[in-house]
Image 1 (tube, helix red, strand yellow):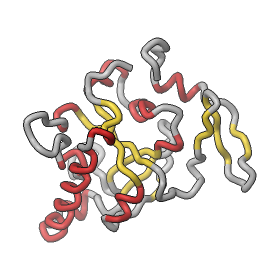
Image 2 (cartoon, rainbow, N blue to C red):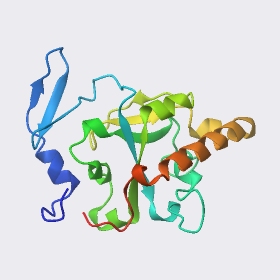
Image 3 (cartoon, rainbow, N blue to C red):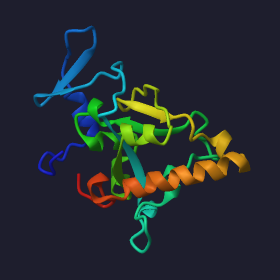
Length: 184
């Protein structure tokens, strides 16, 4: 979204418009002339997935820039990632910053957004499961990266190697969609 609009992700969701048929029973939405995929459409290898990353996970003094911890499942707290870590399908969103809709607007500057390709995730033998969330379209989880498995020492070793690869890929300049502190 451009800074001139100054409305934020929730306003963009309100402007998505009416669903339109795409010819094969799937439903797509349009926003500013851009057709977005329906959450019901299959996830394809050419798609990009977005993940919110907190400011402390951006490390300017280390490589990779994005900490591998940004891809570890929450194992405790009020919402452990028992079904896997979350991503959002970029093709289902009008604006990448829509992934911030579940965050209070005054805290948006505390988050960056990174992207990873579906084909890259599949190359690591990770699967994607659509898990619709009425707050943000295109929500998916990676079930292999879940709190229960991350709590097991044996499985944690294997998963740690995967989260390092995710962090390395997300740290590439072209995969950083938004840095923390960016204006909306």
